[in-house]
Structure formats: C-alpha cells, structure tokens
Picture (cartoon, rainbow, N blue to C red):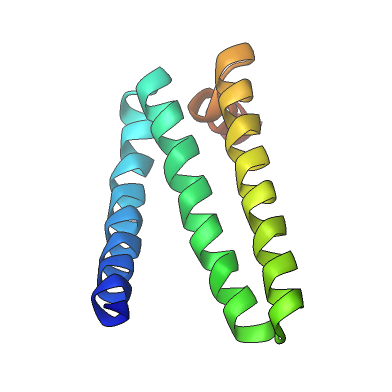
Length: 103
C-alpha cells in the first residue's frame, strides 16, 4: 500500500531530477516552446515536491499541515500558471535565461 506509493513517489522524484538535467542543455542548444513548457512543468513539480518535504519535516499538527498543503498546492498552481503565461506572452524561460547570461 503506502510502501509501494512511497517507492513510486521516490522514483518519480528521481525521474524529474534526471529530466531537469537533460532539459538544461536542451534549453541552451535548442530553445523553443516545447523546452520552455517542459521546464515550466518540471521546475514546478520539482519545487512542489521539495517544499512538500519541508512541510513534512517542519510543520506539525493536523490543521497546520492541511493549511500548509493547501497553500503549497495554490503556490504550485500559481507558479505553473505564471511560467506558462511568461512562456506564451513573453520571451519564454530559455530566452530569458539567455538574456540574463548576456548581461
């Protein structure tokens, strides 16, 4: 039951981390909408899981945990929506990072 779910979650976390390792050179070598949206999804998921672990480690009590988790889902949703909005209405993640590097 929960052991299998935990194992799948751990595997998913590692898969997203490896995906991010591949997306970084892809963002440099062939920037475009597919890489931008993949980065938006992978970065949001990676951050969501990381902050979820912070909540697990440092938030105690049933109500505070529920409030923190709701806040985390809202934050993750807004982050993904913001990155997608940036990709669609502005230059996108890849080009924005390239512009920062050119400064």
